[in-house]
Length: 198
Image (cartoon, rainbow, N blue to C red):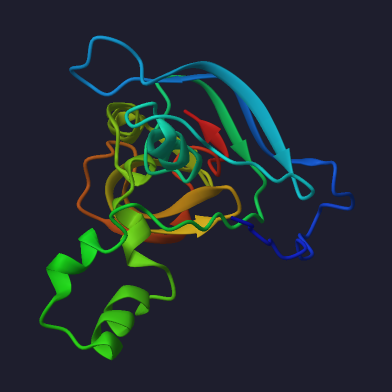
């Protein structure tokens, strides 16, 4: 059997085919409730010139690795870096499982639902986009933004921004930070775009 891959296209910010666009460092992943990690302490990197095959027996962790690389699963430890302009595409073993929720829709209706905001709504359900305990704690903090004390009281939407996500939040304003007055700040990044922590 022979596979042919197209030459990689231009990727903004990458001037050479040798520069790492995906880097995994000492990464491990273990599903909750299992006795041992499915992936244990792996490190590798990929560039535009890389051609990689992920092979192994059933249950070896191939799909788990791909799901970690695409952000559908969060590693238990270690780091996964992907270039901010990269697009990772793959076809899952069970590629059409998510369609079960849309069987009554025509293809056109499904596409309109999925991309109605300009973002891919299917990706919003991935594990790395879910509000974590750490995010909840960050919402309890009081921040000083534009000279006003604020506390995040709601996250209303999110969008992809480079290699991360930005959030559209409403804030409680004022000295007592308990006032009902809310203010929308379009697509504020939950932790990185704050002027300072109060």
